[in-house]
Length: 214
Image (cartoon, rainbow, N blue to C red; front, side, top):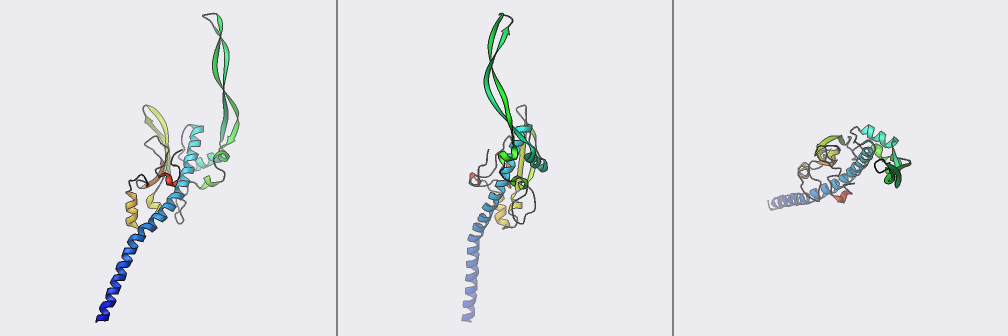
C-alpha cells in the first residue's frame, strides 16, 4: 500500500510540475510565434502602404482593388520635375510702364518607373497574400473618401485579423491578445495600416516591428 501511495504522489507531483511548466512555457512560445508572424505581416502591410501612397501621388486617390494596385506598380511612372525661379515683364496699363514679375517655372525632366523607384524586386506581386505558412488568404483592403472640415479626403485601410494570423495557437492566449491595450503591443483584434474613418496612413504596430508611418 505504501508503494502505491508513493507512486500516486509521484504521478500527482509530475502532473503538477507539467502544469506549472506549461503555464510558463505556453505564453513564452505563444509570444515567440506571435512576434515572428506579426513581423512577416508588417512587411507586407508596409509594402501595401508604399504602393498606395505612390498611387495617390499620381492619381489623387487610393485604390481598393488589389489587382489594379499591383498592375499600377508594374506600369505607372513618376513625373520628374524641377522648380526654378524666373521672372518676366508685364506692361502696367494704368501706370503705362513695364513691370518685372517673379514666378516659378516647373520643368519636366523625364519619367521614372514606380516599380524601379520603390520595389527592387517583384515582392509587391505577393504583398496582398498573408505570408504565414498554412494560411491561405489575403489582407483585407478598402479605399475611398471621407469628409473632414468640409474637405473630401482620400483614405485607405489594409488589415488582417489576429484570428487569422494566430488561429492555430492557444485560444485563451489569443483571446487575451485581441484585448491588448499597450504602447508596446498591437492593440485590438487586427493588425492594420491606414483607416477608413481617420486621415492617417500609419500602422497600429509598435516600432519594434519596423516603421509604422511614412
